[in-house]
Structures are given as C-alpha cells and as structure tokens.
Length: 257
Ligand code: 0WD
Image (cartoon, rainbow, N blue to C red; front, side, top):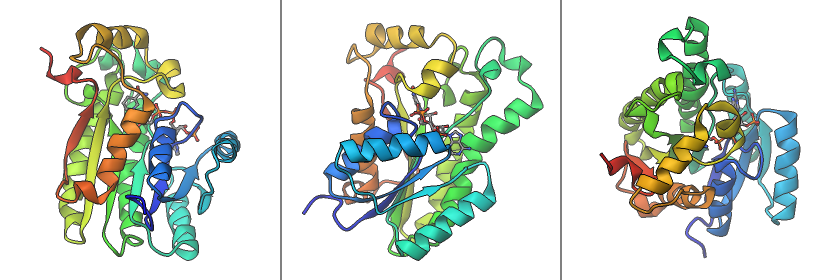
C-alpha cells in the first residue's frame, strides 16, 4: 500500500494544470491518497474535472468553497463531514491581491487592498483550519504555500509579502493550538513558478525567474511537481515530528546573500 493509502486529503486552489495545487494533487494521488477538491470558480471546476478525467484520478468529492466567506467554508466542511466523515490532511493553496497592489510602491497600498490580500491569503488559512479541525478526528496535517517575500523585501511583491508574513506567523500560532489534537501545521516556501496568478499578477516576474537561474545553488527554477512532493512529505507520516515549520523548496535561493 502507498504512503497515503486510506488517507483523505482536501486540496484547494486548482485553477488549471499549472497550479501548484495540481502538482500537490498528483503527488498525493501517486501515493495512494483519497482526494477531496475545493474550487471557487465554475471555470476552475470544469478544468479540474477535465484534469481528473485525463489523469484517471477519481475524487472522493469536489465541493465549491470561496475562502473569503465563512459561510462558504462552513458549508464545504459540513458537506465533507457528511459525505467523507474524517479527513487527515488539508492543502491550502490560495492567495489573492489586486494587480495594482503588486507593482510600484508598497506605501501606496490602499486599506481595501491590504485587507483583501490578508483576508484571502492569510485569514483563509485560519478559517479553514478551524473547520478542518472538526473533521480531523484522527489527527492530521495542514500545509499552506508561502513565498520568500514574507521574509525579505522582494520588489513588486509588496502587499502579498506582508500577507505571506501573516500567513507564516499564523502557521506557528495554529501549530500551537492544534498540536494538542495531533494536528500539524506547516508551510512550503516555493520558488517562483509560472502559474496563472504569478504570470498575470506579479510585475517583474520574469526577472525573479532569471535571478533563480543565476543565483540559486541549484542554478534552476523549481516546478509544481517538486512543490507537490515536498507538500506530500509534510502531509504524510514521514514528517510526523514536524510542526510550525516553513520548508523552502526554492533551489536554495533563500540562503544566498
Ligand atoms: O510563483 C508562484 N506561483 C508561487 C505561488 C510561489 C510561492 C507561493 N505561491 C503560492 C500562492 O501565493 C498561492 O498561495 O501558491 C499558492 C497557489 O498559487 P498558484 O498555484 O500560483 O496560483 P493559481 O494556479 O492561479 O491558483 C490559485 C487559486 C485560483 O483558483 P480559482 O478556482 O479561484 O481560479 O487560488 C484561487 C485562485 O482564483 N483563489 C481562491 N480560491 C477560493 N476562494 C480565492 C478565494 N476567495 N481567491 C483566489
């Protein structure tokens, strides 16, 4: 039996085949996990259905979930509880900021833009963890996706860097609360990957990609599959002693001065 056989894992944030969450889903599927998917847009649901068909993945459940709405999150987990019963893992892979807030000066960030980025990209982890806890009755693992802009000033990343700092701090506080129930909470800090959000959203994204090839110890970029495998590790029993941690999957870029 596979590493994840008998484990029911919720995967959020698949918009298309380039999504980091799709890399996570593939790794989990290969390891034998039972998968539950959440999606926001109808278009993403269609893409998801198509991807699952093409790859011969039979999901336990697909459920709509807008992570900016408490009601939507509660409804999604109520349906998961009713139809699946117990879950063992949650892969949180969603974020959002207005395009205007991902370029130019950070100091220009509006109150609304700041709130939106933090709401969708950081608070959503807290809200989902609270609901997931009720269904993780056998212990579990929650993994989110962060980026170096949380720790350092990365030009143009701006309000999303501040939201990722909040996300990483949330990982530590959630790890304390849920640890008592043997639920672990960790983050992956991935290098830049050409996805829908990244390409369309962050100004100067190509420069960030090029810097990786020049400066990272591995002299190359990482891909969705590498992030998927590291996320699988954090969702599996192989990482059972690890919580409150941020693991960089970035070709080592973050160690370079
Ligand atoms: O370089 C990159 N791509 C990196 C991404 C480097 C390091 C970290 N990350 C993070 C992102 O910040 C995000 O947290 O990884 C996570 C996933 O990002 P991605 O794979 O780059 O992005 P994408 O393929 O565009 O998927 C993001 C999904 C989309 O799905 P839908 O179904 O909405 O099309 O997150 C979704 C986004 O729209 N999303 C939401 N999902 C539910 N509720 C919401 C929301 N309110 N807002 C955005």
